[in-house]
Each structure stands twice: as structure tokens, then as C-alpha cells.
Image 1 (cartoon, one colour):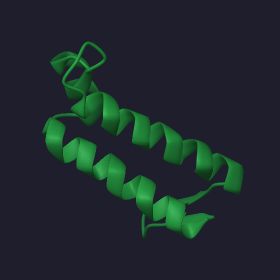
Image 2 (cartoon, rainbow, N blue to C red):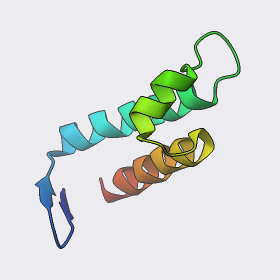
Image 3 (cartoon, rainbow, N blue to C red):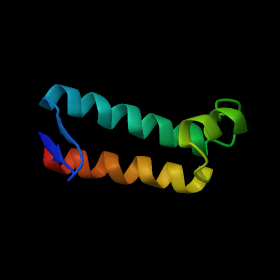
Image 4 (cartoon, one colour):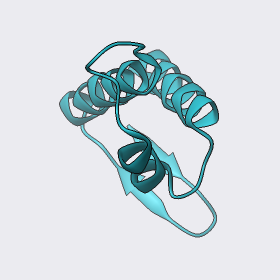
Amino acid sequence: MSVVDPAVSVRLSASGARRLVGMLAEAAQLLEDPGPLRLTEAQAELLGRGTDRRELAEWCRSLAAELRAGL
């Protein structure tokens, strides 16, 4: 699978894309989890580089879905 941006081009194998889909889905779950597995605010801030927690979770889910659809 190829992901192309005018500034950057990245190639992922199918297995790498599947692994990334899983990681993104798990990150979204940890951002949204209301219980003890929830990422702390500091962790979410670091992971999202200032992006709102809800927006970051949605971005993770959207990107995972886009990658999954391309497999």
C-alpha cells in the first residue's frame, strides 16, 4: 500500500498496514476509555501534539478505516 502526500511518500506492506490499523484502533480505544486503561492527559497531549483528545481519537479511527479499506 502506498500513501502519497505532495511532501512525503510512504510505502507500507499489507502486513505493516494491518499492524498500523490495529495500533490506531487501540490508540483510539485508550483515548476514549472511561476506565483505568484510559491514557492520561499528559500521554494524550504528547501523542496528539496539542490535538484535542476527542479529535485525536476520531483521527485514529478514520485513518484506521481508510487503511483497512485499502487492504
